[in-house]
Image (tube, rainbow, N blue to C red; front, side, top):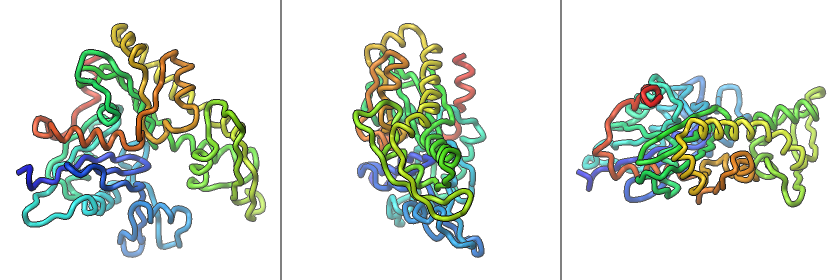
Length: 345
């Protein structure tokens, strides 16, 4: 049956959805945005085309993120988005059964949220659904050897959540998930520009500022960019020049919250594993980890070497892909992360 199967590994992220097809690699990489005609209920666009519509749609069209903080916020839209992306991932025929799907979930997810993910994937066309914790998938995708007793720490900074975990013997020894991540940085930039400069900008512009001049550690040279928005008082178009040093002050607070969570997980970790982490270092994955200076900030706060993984955006998807090798040994349904954590405690 493996010859005809089209098993999928899905990184169902707040910002992007990546789909790994067994034997082919990552074949779908789209923003998790859906554009919908409110009058007819018809999906107009999914992915990058829908993202370009954010803040630019007429009254009858709404462009939205169906996921928030790493979990599903609009079930119906998530199902419709996955249906389109599953079709993109692999052509089905009479000889190919519905795909078995491995989906990653944040380590702080509840059983209700787990069931929501499973139901959405089944309704979108999956035959069976298996869940894997996001930091575990990220570690596999980053190429860490977590099969032995030696401890490794992974910090996965996504769009909606940051997952911090200590891994050993193919399992999670200690973990935490907080809703401070890439979107939090964007929101902080938007709030600051409105409060300090009286200019209202959109989410896409805030993200562009973060990518181009955002930093949480001192840059060798001060970068700047021109930003266009709407004057909060007059409603007229207005532009201003922003400098990296100003944005650094804005982003340091959410970055410190992430660093505090890393320290908290280290405090809950056994001394033997902490000793291993001191030797092996901390690995950063996820799009938010690419923010300039994030690795240096975490190194300073923890005193442990921090390394950015190769292709951090895709680590979780590649990890889901690697886990397809043992899909036959995985159990379906909710993995009851909260219950397992309580048992470990």
